[in-house]
Image (cartoon, one colour):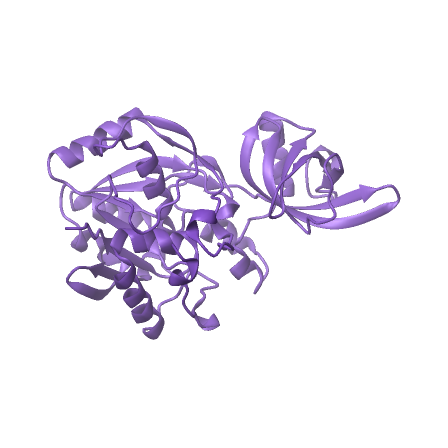
Length: 358
């Protein structure tokens, strides 16, 4: 499928640099077969039915952006590494910037600004070089000690469309984390979940709407543009996820009694689809998923998807087009742009009803 079918023009002023306050005051565009409706996120209990079940991604964003120094003889050069997937107790896949002159076998020193632990040291070896600036870093520390060092030396990995316009600050440490985050490992927030507040969660409980949790550690690859001309030529970066036996059984019970599964975010949806059998029944699952969903895909799990507004030519815009129909999503995005909706991670949200082929 041609990637340019998923392109659109977005004015710069539509990119949100801060979230709505309070979080659940963000706008919510409801998109279904009957058309579109402008609401706000706090209306969600009225838009769902008792017996429906929300599925949240409880991953927690870690300070995965590291500033470092590459040394080659007497020559030093600064670089930045954004961790995106842990592959062992002492190793992470990362995107390096700039990466062109970095060679396998070289050493990189991170955190030498006096702010990190272990006398300000966090060193790694470039074990492998990949494509698109990707590298495998093997750190001198391992396990919980490495986690502590990264937490001390790292910075919140704001998306490039925000970080390129303003500096990270203390507000982002809270703003770029869901209120229910508990499993450390993501390097990008599951942004649909950023709209939820304790008050909204309580209102959903009171309305008889269940909530269940899965874990998908979102990687930095979510921000990478699709550079190929055809979707068949695009390679997805894998992300680690887990669906517990308890959650799988609860969601199967929801479907059995006629309730609807509402995926909060594309990350939750991708994980559910990875864990589902052909029949749509869910089972306990864990591992790495690189599922790439484009129009023509037949969904087996969620009936409704709550998600933010995504980048043009992105895998996420392709996913929502598969879920609700390409033409309908182009109309919805046009409505959102004309209507002043705020886009991307800190932006407004949409509530999409699945467009099942007849």
